Amino acid sequence: MTDFPGTLRTWRKARRFSQLDLAGEADVSARHISFLESGRAQPSREMIGRLSDALALPLDARNHMLTHAGFAARYPARAWDSADMAPVRAAVGHMLRAHAPYPALALDKVWTVIDLNAPASHLFGMLGVGQGDSLLDLMTSDHLPEVVENWPEVAHHACQRLRTESAAQGGIAVLDKVADHLGRVPGRKTHTTGPVIPTVLLSGDLRLSIFATIAQFGTPEDVALDDLKVELYFPSDDETDKALRALAEHRAP
Image (cartoon, rainbow, N blue to C red; front, side, top):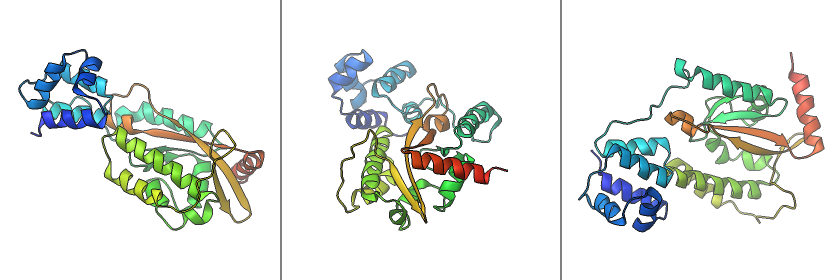
């Protein structure tokens, strides 16, 4: 069994909480937090739940807290193609299809493409990415800087997002590695005058300027679902809107 006191201490420091801060958030005494971290007190399942809520832990980290304290894990990690996940697959599929003619895809914790709609399949297919591939591999390839007009800007903001996601999960080595790679991309990080920084893709005579929104499930009780993200891409100008609609009509059966 891994050390529960060390696990609690690591997460508390990752969240930049003092023992007093955590005590206030979990509505317990700072002395009890100290005893838990020193091993002088043993947590109950209910206490682990309160601490996990206070630290805003992801579900897999909550499982680790439980197992490190000698309890059974609470949250399952169901396979995407399992019967239990059928309603979720249907919901995600509906979101992706309904978003056409604009691209949309579903990603897991390490940015592997779980599902995507037809426009995304076409767009990311031009970049060599399909279902089962990871966008992290694309970010570190030599190809992307050649087709993204504003690559230094995009790389900078992707780096910040990866670091934020990794920190929220307590540190994910593969996200940190790609973030470090993107953080070394040369070029001036200019400031946009618009409300968002788009990704400007170039492919022959085609120029697409798109930005993304991210959707997640609000009440997950499954580790895989807790990690799932749905990215919906939108055009940032009229030319891109027309181009995406034209591509969708051209590929329609």
